[in-house]
Length: 245
Image (cartoon, rainbow, N blue to C red; front, side, top):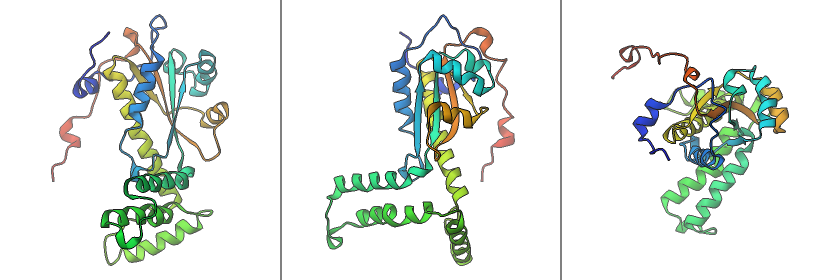
């Protein structure tokens, strides 16, 4: 069994692998454990607006590969993980957070006995989250945007309150989970490749996803062949992207 890598070792080990070795299977339980670690990723307001579809069936992989435009990373994958955003589940996730607060502080605490921390948490999930996520055909989002823009003339305020803004929030959050997953896989000595190029409509239909679900990315998994890494790693010089203020 391979020695698990440190965080720095996993980051340096991870490469986008396009060709996997068909003779070297990977363990489903290890991939599942890495997905569990993905779910521990930091995320906006702890709303966890994501789902993870672990594809282990060779038949399903064969059906998905054409929807990923037959990329080698998809065709040769031992397993796939589809990262999905679920912005439409914001009400259920807010309620789950409120239930968690009930468990910590008590379900029927009168306001007079609530600590400041409890009041802030209940207000956040009971009022602020609905304000940010609720919308109807984009109309509420536009009205909220006008309101916060006016308030913003006088003080700092959160301005990303439109439907399109919250969609971006959900995708950023899901991307953090995907990164957690790929680094966890790297720590195990497993290889991955994040794929944004896919026919998301057909992927959703194959997986029978709800209309509110969106594909964030598909990550292929396996053990790389030597030709699976297309050359040396290239990065823009760090001095060009690092700005100390």
